[in-house]
Image (cartoon, rainbow, N blue to C red):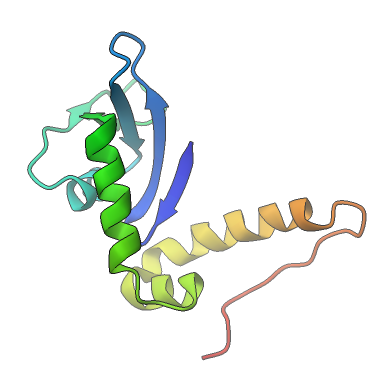
Length: 116
């Protein structure tokens, strides 16, 4: 599962050996330290996602719930532009790429920053 947050993007997959654990992976360690303060980050230069943490499913669910409960913004793109503008170019690429899913037979269009 890919999840795009105001802290950055994470990839979450099941642990191969322990059903109760998840591997939360990121391309930047700061994303993991923001979401899981104090947790030990595993670094692997050869992996697709260089940084990861192993967490219990319940802990991951608590982190996701915390993000949802703390949400105050009405527009995610505008929020990211204010809180983490370095993420915006990548997030716009994802946003525009997924426009094709909305009306696959009509073609797509490109969107930039929302007017403030």
